[in-house]
Amino acid sequence: MGFLKRTHSKFDYQPRYYKGEGNPYKIEHKLDQFRTTAGKNKGLKGKFSDAINDLKNSDKNLNKTLLIIISILVFIFLYIIDFDLSIFKGN
Image (cartoon, rainbow, N blue to C red):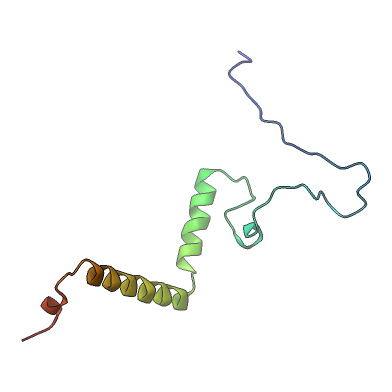
């Protein structure tokens, strides 16, 4: 049953006259070096637990900034669609 098992071969081209370090044609995302879930092939459970740990140890200032930006965008959207914002004010 060899046709059910498929292995994907990696593209590993090395130029003939290149004298630098590593492969200049290696495709890698710019932010992979900062991610804990990228690069290591640990399986789905390991990646999920790493993502949960990153979420628990995230920067609190970033979360506040993101919340402020989202709230401003929501209020701009409500203003554009002529939503009556006076319901948020008391008499």
